[in-house]
Each structure stands twice: as structure tokens, then as C-alpha cells.
Image 1: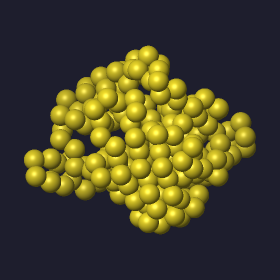
Image 2: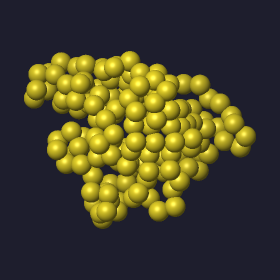
Image 3: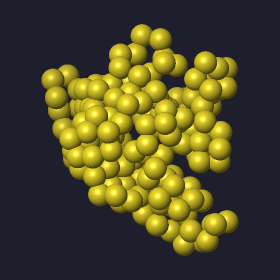
Length: 169
């Protein structure tokens, strides 16, 4: 990881990995199909092609501005890079794994490449960990109920926030 400084912000990109017991095509669709993205990440407008839109509306977070993005790299079933207006570059990489209940599973590696003030890193980590939980739920047929997000997800978000704060202290 490369440390960088932008103005008052510095830090390394945040990296996450999560295994899902689904074939890559299913996980891929959850990254590039607007309806599926809306079921786990945020209300979305996605044009799945290089140069296409990747816009997110955070309806469950009062006061959070919309994110406007462009797909800058797209290798189907393998990698998706999105440059965004306010959360940096998102790099999604998929690796096929053997095994699992469906005889195949997928490792999703997510890199969030953005200059983040150290004080906000636990918040960003907690957000992405909950998002990855929500992706798993969507893949099992349970999209997020955005109207009840706080009631259904706040406890796990708070736990992730506390764990992230303890690991960066």
C-alpha cells in the first residue's frame, strides 16, 4: 500500500476482502446491474460500460451528498474501477474460488483509494463492512430495506465502527 498526502489528509487505501458462495457471474451482476446495486449499496444509476455512469444516492444517510461516478476500467467477471466525486476510486476485483455449497464461490476484493482523514477512517471502514454484509444478504435474496436501514443495520455498523476505532488507535 502506498501512503499519500492530499492537503490535510493522508493514509493508505482501505482494502477489504469477502468470500461469497456464489459464482462470479452472480457477484459481478451485483456490481454492475443498477437494480442489484440498489439492493445492497445505495440507490444507483449504472451504465455498465467504460465511461458509463455509476451514480449513488445514499437515501439511508441524511445529509450525505450523492456520489457521481464514472466506470474507468471494466474487465467483465474480474475487475471494475469507478472514479467517484466524493469517495475516491473504488476497485472491485473478483477471484473464482473452488468449493462452497454451489461448488464454486467468489472472493471480492475491494480497494477504496481515497485520502481519508485519520479521524474518519473508522467511519469509512464501518460503512464498507456493512455494505459488504448487505451484498451478502442481497445475494441470498434479501435486499436492503432502505426505509428501515437504521433499525436493521445500525447495531452492526456501530460494532464495526468500534472495532475499527480500536484497531487504528
